[in-house]
Image (cartoon, rainbow, N blue to C red):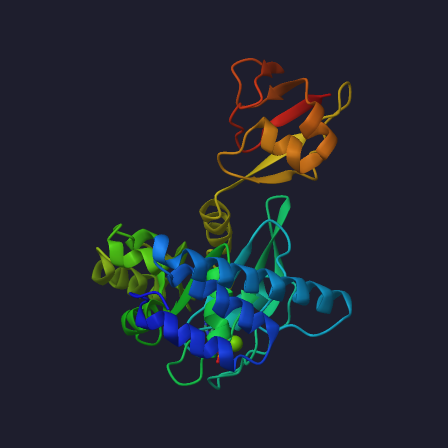
Length: 328
Ligand SMILES: Nc1nc2c(ncn2[C@@H]2O[C@H](COP(=O)(O)OP(=O)(O)OP(=O)(O)O)[C@@H](O)[C@H]2O)c(=O)[nH]1
Ligand SMILES: [Mg+2]
Protein backbone atom coordinates (compact mmCIF):
# COMPACT_ATOMS: atom_id res chain seq x y z
CA UNK A 1 0.00 0.00 0.00
CA UNK A 2 1.53 3.34 -0.94
CA UNK A 3 2.21 5.76 1.84
CA UNK A 4 0.82 9.27 2.41
CA UNK A 5 -2.79 8.56 1.48
CA UNK A 6 -4.90 11.18 3.31
CA UNK A 7 -7.39 10.06 6.00
CA UNK A 8 -10.23 11.21 3.76
CA UNK A 9 -9.23 8.58 1.24
CA UNK A 10 -9.87 5.85 3.81
CA UNK A 11 -13.23 7.41 4.70
CA UNK A 12 -14.21 7.34 1.05
CA UNK A 13 -12.92 3.77 0.77
CA UNK A 14 -15.07 2.76 3.74
CA UNK A 15 -18.14 4.39 2.21
CA UNK A 16 -17.31 2.71 -1.09
CA UNK A 17 -17.33 -0.72 0.58
CA UNK A 18 -20.58 0.05 2.37
CA UNK A 19 -22.34 1.64 -0.61
CA UNK A 20 -25.41 -0.28 -1.62
CA UNK A 21 -25.89 0.92 -5.15
CA UNK A 22 -23.76 1.44 -8.22
CA UNK A 23 -24.28 5.21 -8.38
CA UNK A 24 -22.92 5.69 -4.87
CA UNK A 25 -20.06 3.27 -5.48
CA UNK A 26 -19.05 5.18 -8.60
CA UNK A 27 -19.22 8.51 -6.76
CA UNK A 28 -17.02 7.15 -3.92
CA UNK A 29 -14.48 5.74 -6.38
CA UNK A 30 -14.30 9.05 -8.21
CA UNK A 31 -13.73 10.74 -4.89
CA UNK A 32 -10.99 8.25 -3.98
CA UNK A 33 -9.24 8.82 -7.30
CA UNK A 34 -9.30 12.56 -6.72
CA UNK A 35 -7.76 12.04 -3.27
CA UNK A 36 -4.77 9.90 -4.28
CA UNK A 37 -1.66 12.08 -4.46
CA UNK A 38 -0.09 11.95 -7.92
CA UNK A 39 3.43 10.46 -7.85
CA UNK A 40 5.23 7.33 -9.00
CA UNK A 41 4.43 5.40 -5.83
CA UNK A 42 0.70 5.67 -6.47
CA UNK A 43 0.72 4.82 -10.20
CA UNK A 44 -0.50 1.29 -9.66
CA UNK A 45 -3.17 2.22 -7.15
CA UNK A 46 -4.54 4.94 -9.45
CA UNK A 47 -4.57 2.55 -12.41
CA UNK A 48 -6.40 -0.09 -10.33
CA UNK A 49 -8.98 2.42 -9.14
CA UNK A 50 -9.55 3.68 -12.68
CA UNK A 51 -9.98 0.13 -13.94
CA UNK A 52 -12.51 -0.56 -11.21
CA UNK A 53 -14.31 2.70 -12.02
CA UNK A 54 -14.59 1.88 -15.69
CA UNK A 55 -15.91 -1.61 -14.82
CA UNK A 56 -18.61 -0.11 -12.58
CA UNK A 57 -19.53 2.49 -15.20
CA UNK A 58 -19.98 -0.25 -17.80
CA UNK A 59 -22.11 -2.16 -15.33
CA UNK A 60 -24.17 0.98 -14.66
CA UNK A 61 -24.66 1.49 -18.39
CA UNK A 62 -25.92 -2.02 -18.91
CA UNK A 63 -28.21 -1.67 -15.85
CA UNK A 64 -29.59 1.49 -17.36
CA UNK A 65 -30.28 -0.33 -20.60
CA UNK A 66 -32.14 -3.01 -18.69
CA UNK A 67 -34.11 -0.54 -16.63
CA UNK A 68 -32.51 -0.90 -13.18
CA UNK A 69 -33.01 2.06 -10.81
CA UNK A 70 -29.91 4.16 -10.14
CA UNK A 71 -29.48 6.23 -6.97
CA UNK A 72 -32.18 8.85 -6.35
CA UNK A 73 -29.32 11.35 -6.20
CA UNK A 74 -28.13 10.55 -9.69
CA UNK A 75 -30.17 12.67 -12.07
CA UNK A 76 -29.34 12.67 -15.77
CA UNK A 77 -28.38 16.09 -17.07
CA UNK A 78 -30.84 17.68 -19.45
CA UNK A 79 -30.85 21.00 -21.26
CA UNK A 80 -28.07 23.57 -21.29
CA UNK A 81 -26.86 22.99 -17.72
CA UNK A 82 -27.67 21.29 -14.42
CA UNK A 83 -28.13 23.56 -11.41
CA UNK A 84 -28.42 22.14 -7.88
CA UNK A 85 -30.65 24.25 -5.63
CA UNK A 86 -29.42 23.58 -2.10
CA UNK A 87 -29.72 25.07 1.37
CA UNK A 88 -31.04 24.55 4.89
CA UNK A 89 -34.58 23.34 5.63
CA UNK A 90 -37.55 25.59 4.95
CA UNK A 91 -35.73 28.35 3.08
CA UNK A 92 -37.98 27.86 0.04
CA UNK A 93 -35.91 25.65 -2.28
CA UNK A 94 -38.95 23.69 -3.42
CA UNK A 95 -41.02 26.87 -3.75
CA UNK A 96 -38.33 28.35 -6.00
CA UNK A 97 -38.00 25.25 -8.18
CA UNK A 98 -41.80 25.05 -8.43
CA UNK A 99 -42.06 28.72 -9.45
CA UNK A 100 -39.19 28.68 -11.95
CA UNK A 101 -39.71 25.29 -13.62
CA UNK A 102 -42.37 22.82 -14.74
CA UNK A 103 -41.71 20.61 -11.67
CA UNK A 104 -44.24 20.32 -8.86
CA UNK A 105 -42.37 19.56 -5.65
CA UNK A 106 -44.20 19.55 -2.32
CA UNK A 107 -43.96 22.87 -0.46
CA UNK A 108 -44.79 23.11 3.23
CA UNK A 109 -44.15 25.23 6.33
CA UNK A 110 -42.89 22.06 8.05
CA UNK A 111 -39.12 21.59 7.73
CA UNK A 112 -37.71 18.49 5.94
CA UNK A 113 -40.51 18.29 3.42
CA UNK A 114 -38.25 17.26 0.56
CA UNK A 115 -36.63 13.85 0.89
CA UNK A 116 -35.21 13.25 -2.55
CA UNK A 117 -34.04 15.44 -5.42
CA UNK A 118 -36.46 16.40 -8.16
CA UNK A 119 -35.55 17.94 -11.53
CA UNK A 120 -37.46 20.64 -13.41
CA UNK A 121 -36.72 22.63 -16.57
CA UNK A 122 -36.45 26.43 -16.43
CA UNK A 123 -36.72 28.43 -19.65
CA UNK A 124 -34.10 31.18 -20.01
CA UNK A 125 -33.89 33.15 -23.25
CA UNK A 126 -34.53 30.45 -25.87
CA UNK A 127 -32.98 27.53 -23.98
CA UNK A 128 -33.87 25.30 -21.03
CA UNK A 129 -31.78 24.92 -17.88
CA UNK A 130 -32.32 22.06 -15.46
CA UNK A 131 -32.87 22.94 -11.79
CA UNK A 132 -32.71 20.25 -9.11
CA UNK A 133 -34.76 20.66 -5.94
CA UNK A 134 -32.92 18.87 -3.12
CA UNK A 135 -33.45 17.72 0.46
CA UNK A 136 -32.22 20.20 3.10
CA UNK A 137 -28.60 20.51 4.17
CA UNK A 138 -28.63 19.15 7.68
CA UNK A 139 -25.68 17.81 9.69
CA UNK A 140 -27.73 14.79 10.83
CA UNK A 141 -30.05 13.90 7.98
CA UNK A 142 -28.23 14.81 4.77
CA UNK A 143 -27.27 11.73 2.77
CA UNK A 144 -23.82 11.55 1.12
CA UNK A 145 -25.58 11.35 -2.25
CA UNK A 146 -26.46 15.04 -1.98
CA UNK A 147 -22.78 15.98 -2.03
CA UNK A 148 -22.20 13.76 -5.05
CA UNK A 149 -25.05 15.58 -6.76
CA UNK A 150 -23.45 18.94 -5.88
CA UNK A 151 -20.06 17.80 -7.20
CA UNK A 152 -21.55 16.79 -10.54
CA UNK A 153 -23.75 19.87 -11.02
CA UNK A 154 -22.63 22.61 -13.40
CA UNK A 155 -23.70 25.28 -10.91
CA UNK A 156 -24.99 25.45 -7.35
CA UNK A 157 -27.65 27.89 -6.18
CA UNK A 158 -27.43 28.14 -2.40
CA UNK A 159 -30.69 29.45 -0.94
CA UNK A 160 -30.85 31.21 2.43
CA UNK A 161 -33.88 32.73 4.13
CA UNK A 162 -34.21 36.47 4.80
CA UNK A 163 -36.77 35.72 7.52
CA UNK A 164 -34.55 33.26 9.39
CA UNK A 165 -30.87 33.80 10.26
CA UNK A 166 -29.36 34.01 6.77
CA UNK A 167 -25.79 34.66 7.87
CA UNK A 168 -25.78 31.63 10.13
CA UNK A 169 -27.45 29.59 7.37
CA UNK A 170 -24.79 30.65 4.87
CA UNK A 171 -21.89 29.73 7.14
CA UNK A 172 -23.43 26.42 8.22
CA UNK A 173 -24.14 25.44 4.60
CA UNK A 174 -20.65 26.40 3.50
CA UNK A 175 -19.17 24.43 6.36
CA UNK A 176 -21.14 21.33 5.39
CA UNK A 177 -19.88 21.61 1.83
CA UNK A 178 -16.33 22.16 3.04
CA UNK A 179 -16.47 19.12 5.29
CA UNK A 180 -17.27 17.11 2.15
CA UNK A 181 -14.38 18.77 0.30
CA UNK A 182 -16.48 21.07 -1.82
CA UNK A 183 -15.49 24.73 -2.18
CA UNK A 184 -17.17 27.67 -3.89
CA UNK A 185 -15.09 28.73 -6.89
CA UNK A 186 -14.88 32.30 -5.63
CA UNK A 187 -13.11 31.27 -2.42
CA UNK A 188 -10.34 29.29 -4.11
CA UNK A 189 -6.86 30.51 -3.18
CA UNK A 190 -4.70 27.84 -4.90
CA UNK A 191 -3.33 26.56 -1.60
CA UNK A 192 -2.01 22.97 -1.92
CA UNK A 193 -4.62 21.86 0.61
CA UNK A 194 -7.39 22.88 -1.78
CA UNK A 195 -6.12 20.55 -4.50
CA UNK A 196 -8.21 17.78 -3.06
CA UNK A 197 -11.42 19.80 -3.12
CA UNK A 198 -14.06 19.83 -5.79
CA UNK A 199 -14.48 23.44 -6.87
CA UNK A 200 -18.04 24.42 -7.79
CA UNK A 201 -19.44 27.75 -8.96
CA UNK A 202 -22.02 28.96 -6.43
CA UNK A 203 -24.65 31.70 -6.45
CA UNK A 204 -26.05 32.68 -3.06
CA UNK A 205 -29.72 33.61 -3.22
CA UNK A 206 -31.72 35.22 -0.40
CA UNK A 207 -35.33 34.06 -0.62
CA UNK A 208 -38.47 35.63 0.85
CA UNK A 209 -37.64 39.19 -0.30
CA UNK A 210 -41.37 39.61 -0.82
CA UNK A 211 -41.83 43.41 -0.66
CA UNK A 212 -40.19 46.82 -0.14
CA UNK A 213 -39.77 46.26 3.59
CA UNK A 214 -37.87 43.06 2.97
CA UNK A 215 -35.77 44.96 0.39
CA UNK A 216 -34.56 47.17 3.25
CA UNK A 217 -33.69 44.13 5.34
CA UNK A 218 -31.91 42.70 2.32
CA UNK A 219 -29.78 45.87 2.02
CA UNK A 220 -28.78 45.59 5.67
CA UNK A 221 -27.88 41.95 5.12
CA UNK A 222 -25.70 42.89 2.12
CA UNK A 223 -23.81 45.38 4.29
CA UNK A 224 -23.21 42.72 6.94
CA UNK A 225 -22.11 40.34 4.20
CA UNK A 226 -19.54 42.66 2.70
CA UNK A 227 -16.34 40.81 1.97
CA UNK A 228 -18.08 37.43 1.93
CA UNK A 229 -19.82 37.07 -1.41
CA UNK A 230 -22.44 38.79 -3.55
CA UNK A 231 -26.08 38.07 -2.65
CA UNK A 232 -29.08 37.96 -4.95
CA UNK A 233 -32.57 38.74 -3.65
CA UNK A 234 -35.58 36.72 -4.78
CA UNK A 235 -39.10 35.86 -3.70
CA UNK A 236 -40.45 32.48 -4.73
CA UNK A 237 -43.85 33.54 -3.49
CA UNK A 238 -44.24 36.78 -5.44
CA UNK A 239 -41.81 36.03 -8.33
CA UNK A 240 -39.83 39.22 -7.60
CA UNK A 241 -36.35 39.40 -9.19
CA UNK A 242 -36.90 36.23 -11.21
CA UNK A 243 -35.51 37.71 -14.45
CA UNK A 244 -32.39 38.90 -12.67
CA UNK A 245 -31.87 35.45 -11.11
CA UNK A 246 -32.39 33.62 -14.39
CA UNK A 247 -29.88 35.81 -16.23
CA UNK A 248 -27.39 35.41 -13.41
CA UNK A 249 -27.74 31.63 -13.59
CA UNK A 250 -27.26 31.74 -17.36
CA UNK A 251 -24.14 33.88 -17.06
CA UNK A 252 -22.62 31.87 -14.25
CA UNK A 253 -23.00 28.70 -16.33
CA UNK A 254 -20.52 30.29 -18.75
CA UNK A 255 -22.29 29.08 -21.85
CA UNK A 256 -22.99 30.68 -25.20
CA UNK A 257 -25.74 30.16 -27.77
CA UNK A 258 -24.68 29.82 -31.36
CA UNK A 259 -26.95 29.39 -34.40
CA UNK A 260 -26.07 27.22 -37.36
CA UNK A 261 -26.93 28.44 -40.84
CA UNK A 262 -26.93 26.02 -43.76
CA UNK A 263 -25.33 27.65 -46.86
CA UNK A 264 -27.90 29.72 -48.74
CA UNK A 265 -30.55 29.37 -46.03
CA UNK A 266 -31.75 31.39 -43.06
CA UNK A 267 -30.49 30.35 -39.60
CA UNK A 268 -32.89 28.67 -37.20
CA UNK A 269 -32.94 31.24 -34.41
CA UNK A 270 -35.22 29.17 -32.18
CA UNK A 271 -32.83 26.31 -31.59
CA UNK A 272 -29.33 27.39 -30.66
CA UNK A 273 -26.39 25.09 -30.10
CA UNK A 274 -25.20 25.58 -26.54
CA UNK A 275 -21.42 25.61 -26.09
CA UNK A 276 -19.04 26.40 -23.26
CA UNK A 277 -17.67 29.95 -23.30
CA UNK A 278 -14.31 29.83 -25.08
CA UNK A 279 -15.53 27.41 -27.76
CA UNK A 280 -14.34 27.74 -31.33
CA UNK A 281 -15.66 26.94 -34.81
CA UNK A 282 -14.22 23.47 -34.54
CA UNK A 283 -16.07 22.82 -31.24
CA UNK A 284 -19.31 23.79 -32.94
CA UNK A 285 -18.54 21.55 -35.92
CA UNK A 286 -17.84 18.66 -33.55
CA UNK A 287 -21.14 19.25 -31.79
CA UNK A 288 -23.21 19.38 -34.98
CA UNK A 289 -21.89 16.30 -36.70
CA UNK A 290 -18.75 14.21 -37.06
CA UNK A 291 -18.76 14.86 -40.80
CA UNK A 292 -18.56 18.60 -40.22
CA UNK A 293 -15.73 18.11 -37.80
CA UNK A 294 -13.74 15.89 -40.14
CA UNK A 295 -14.39 17.65 -43.43
CA UNK A 296 -14.78 21.30 -42.47
CA UNK A 297 -13.49 23.52 -45.29
CA UNK A 298 -14.60 27.02 -44.35
CA UNK A 299 -16.78 28.96 -41.94
CA UNK A 300 -18.48 32.34 -42.04
CA UNK A 301 -19.72 34.22 -38.99
CA UNK A 302 -22.38 36.88 -38.49
CA UNK A 303 -22.27 38.61 -35.10
CA UNK A 304 -18.94 38.90 -33.32
CA UNK A 305 -16.87 39.44 -36.49
CA UNK A 306 -15.87 42.84 -37.89
CA UNK A 307 -17.80 42.17 -41.13
CA UNK A 308 -21.10 40.33 -41.52
CA UNK A 309 -20.51 36.88 -42.96
CA UNK A 310 -16.75 37.12 -42.48
CA UNK A 311 -14.64 34.08 -43.33
CA UNK A 312 -12.94 32.81 -40.17
CA UNK A 313 -10.37 30.19 -39.19
CA UNK A 314 -11.23 26.91 -37.45
CA UNK A 315 -9.93 28.27 -34.14
CA UNK A 316 -12.10 31.42 -34.27
CA UNK A 317 -13.50 32.14 -30.79
CA UNK A 318 -17.30 32.19 -30.89
CA UNK A 319 -19.47 34.66 -28.95
CA UNK A 320 -23.03 34.44 -27.61
CA UNK A 321 -25.51 35.01 -30.43
CA UNK A 322 -23.15 34.26 -33.33
CA UNK A 323 -24.62 32.81 -36.52
CA UNK A 324 -22.28 30.39 -38.23
CA UNK A 325 -22.28 28.91 -41.70
CA UNK A 326 -20.15 25.79 -42.01
CA UNK A 327 -19.09 24.36 -45.37
CA UNK A 328 -17.67 20.90 -45.89
N1 LIG B 1 -42.95 34.69 2.55
C1 LIG B 1 -42.42 33.74 1.77
N2 LIG B 1 -42.54 32.45 2.10
C2 LIG B 1 -41.99 31.54 1.29
C3 LIG B 1 -41.30 31.89 0.11
N3 LIG B 1 -40.84 30.77 -0.47
C4 LIG B 1 -41.25 29.75 0.31
N4 LIG B 1 -41.95 30.20 1.37
C5 LIG B 1 -42.56 29.39 2.44
O1 LIG B 1 -41.51 28.78 3.18
C6 LIG B 1 -41.93 27.48 3.61
C7 LIG B 1 -40.92 26.44 3.15
O2 LIG B 1 -40.95 26.36 1.75
P1 LIG B 1 -40.37 25.09 0.98
O3 LIG B 1 -40.29 25.45 -0.46
O4 LIG B 1 -41.08 23.85 1.34
O5 LIG B 1 -38.90 25.08 1.61
P2 LIG B 1 -37.71 24.04 1.35
O6 LIG B 1 -36.45 24.80 1.41
O7 LIG B 1 -37.98 23.25 0.13
O8 LIG B 1 -37.85 23.11 2.64
P3 LIG B 1 -37.31 21.61 2.84
O9 LIG B 1 -37.84 20.76 1.73
O10 LIG B 1 -37.83 21.23 4.16
O11 LIG B 1 -35.83 21.70 2.84
C8 LIG B 1 -43.34 27.26 3.02
O12 LIG B 1 -44.28 27.57 4.02
C9 LIG B 1 -43.40 28.26 1.88
O13 LIG B 1 -44.73 28.69 1.61
C10 LIG B 1 -41.21 33.29 -0.22
O14 LIG B 1 -40.62 33.71 -1.23
N5 LIG B 1 -41.77 34.16 0.65
MG1 LIG C 1 -38.26 21.28 -0.16
